[in-house]
Length: 224
Image (cartoon, rainbow, N blue to C red; front, side, top):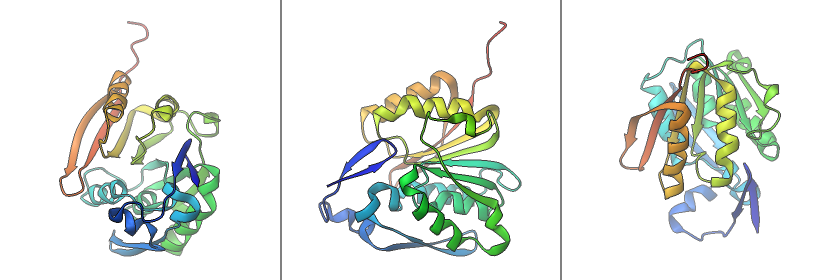
């Protein structure tokens, strides 16, 4: 059986790795931004799109440490999955567009709706975004903050992901990527990113082996 997410065909084998057993739980609960957040998970139906990965948790820890200004900012989350990062960003004061591919949207929307209080429901919008496709649906250079947790893992997605980042980011936009560097290809993506963005490692969670990188678009050199 194979599961589809962000251009990825992911083999599904139940209990294949004991350490991944928590991903097969029907829910995952956290406490961020002074609120309990309980997210539905559905590994069997949606695979990687419907479980909380460590990178998302580490990103939320980083956001809660107030290392980046969120209040009043316009943010977008890429490859949101269960929506944890976008939910926490909204709770911390951002106006967030939370995106993923179409098959994950109903599941994602339910998690967002059930974890935001009534007065913040309008602070988060769930929207379909396949990297590199129909980017004109999103304002060019229109975001203060772009968030991505564990979205760097498939080489086939690197070029469309870069295209998407180029479209969404102004020179002032902050990109935050939470990554586990598993393979050489992950390092290769960071090399691609550094060709167009200034990239800095800003946080490392040793226990989970997750890095957070901050990137800013390099100013255009046209006219030089």
